[in-house]
Length: 147
Image 1 (spheres, rainbow, N blue to C red):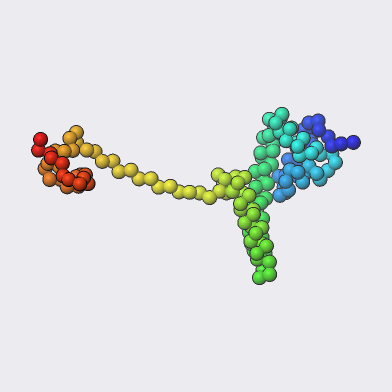
Image 2: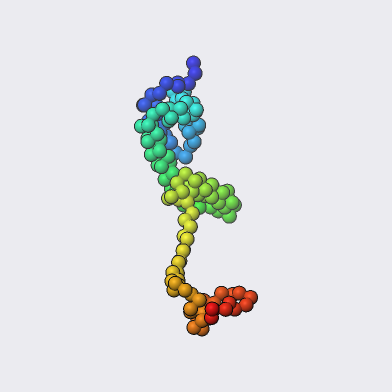
């Protein structure tokens, strides 16, 4: 007998519960019990059931917190012998968090944009005629402004 593929809200909720408290992928969770559908069947359930999509999104949010909660203990447990492995574990979690929840864990870019408004008179050539050098364009020769 194969894995179940007919949607069952109680099974879907149990899968979401396991996802929310672990760092396991959907494939691992679905493979952990014969009563669970395959991950492909679960993805079909997601397409067909809005309430499951909402529950799954909440489970993934909770799972992100589980990943974030693991970072400091991993870093604190590093020793001279295992620091590279611990660093890899920390960096993998940071990267995954930045992709799963970029608004919360992603790199924030601060962009400063400053606009200075310059108001020119209707005829800037009059200023040039009066000797204002700052607005004078960098032409090869000075324009004739007396005409």
